[in-house]
Image 1: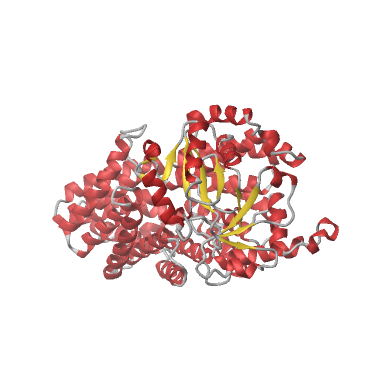
Image 2: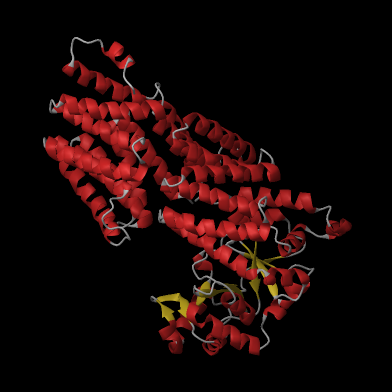
Length: 627
């Protein structure tokens, strides 16, 4: 097979391995399913005919990405760390650890020291692999009993880095995708596990670099029993004290990791009630394993702050979680670390939801200062905080400040590698909302179109993100005057939301996203001259939003403003007065007098009052009202 590439080898292997055709997953020749140890061994015996040597990695969940610990630790939201950020992390880690082991580490080169630190649970860019397919299979089956496991495998035909190589070689990538590293000093456990490491400059092994063998959840126990018969067991894999202790409490850790990934998936699907349940259970395990002042506890608390914030349920509980997470990180890291900034940002988002905009502005400011100091001015972390700050100003009704922050965020993103298009779409969506409320229809339409284009490319036509983009685009087309196009786009958004509601546990309960669609539909009907139809949609949306958020919500106030405007146009002045007074009361309490939303609602209320009582001084009358 000399001269053949891994891709050529793989093509020959799949074409000539007719016996394994039934194992192919969804016609994806890079993923096959085995249901026994016998099938697994037969598969790799055949594979070995096409490659000189393979390397393996077992993961107890097939849907987990192949990422380094450093990559996971430095990822913020959807923003992966850059190669430069990873390099700086490793430089700090190495410099801070040189004094350990009574000076012994001074004789280690950088990569050897990282390997030893990784053995003791440090977050590095080394990704654990093994030269033994059976050891990898044990790891794939030993945890996450309710999920399919996977053994990912690569050809050893990758560039090797050695003891004399420096960090610059692996972080100044010149087209090489991955590197292999065998440390000169091996711990007992590394010998037992036949360990080696792969290094990706960005900390992530992309799907194109490896193939996978899937082990279904229902056969894991049987495979473990067969492996133990062959001597591949916990005692073999974890032969030292550290390994024993790790294995002793593995059940709690396995469940914790399972809940962590469940929560992440539920966040991505915006299933915030389920997300909260997952993280609440995770918090109990974390407190039991690590105590109340551990970074892992802070991580779960930060996730709880986020989930409860966006589910609008038990916001006081979310605030306690956020303050606790911040206290932990201030104690562990001080006031100038990225983890502390993450805690500030989570609380700032919560305060925005609570209408405490001054506190939110203060905490976003703290997070922004730390991120700029820690990562530099043009990092995705800074861009993310600026975008959230802009969204807060938008909610507050300070549109110019919102626009400035979001444009700065987008400018930073334009200078970064295109690794996070979902966040870019979010920024365009927010900018479109601001432009619409500022009366800038041209930019609103342009930015909304860009958001929709990105989301359709990322998620396809049938997704929550695309449905939200369709709804926003419909509003802008309506404002632009293209009623037919607006109705067509809104129908797509409605279709997704109603299908999702029909399959939910509460099919009769209108969601907040569907209520937003009803408001947009009311706008379209009003443009068509159907005021009664618009009022009916606005009223239905208001009832749904009140049930979700409560009367004193800016979302409900928005519906009241739309009702008030429509009542004014149809000369139903007492109804307009009632709706607009409710909206003014909410905005005044939540946003303050200086907000554009508050000023706009009071302007409309003045019109309604002048129609009802044209001879009464509005300001004097208003001073005596219980708003």
